[in-house]
Length: 133
Image 1 (cartoon, rainbow, N blue to C red):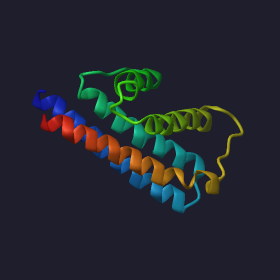
Image 2: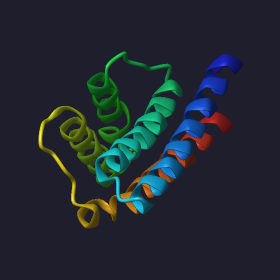
Image 3: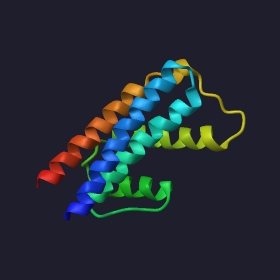
């Protein structure tokens, strides 16, 4: 893997952790829809970094999701449970950002923070192992 790709992978991981920090602030202030958005983007940046370890990318969010499932979940590299977390965030972000009259209940989505933090950490661990190879 060349240095530019590795730098991009690390940048996207940084963005994932930064998005988690933003989500925590939004949760604290009760901004549930934007909180869900930032959780999704934390997972999205982590997944897009993981895809780069195989030199995979897509210009569409649905393409990132599909590549993630085909190349990592289906292959057993990422547990199915984590794939389901990503799917939930993907669908919820779509609803929250694009559908009218969608308001997430803050108590319902609060546990998603720890789920997403665990997701990002697990993906980061996989990436680190792949970078060491």
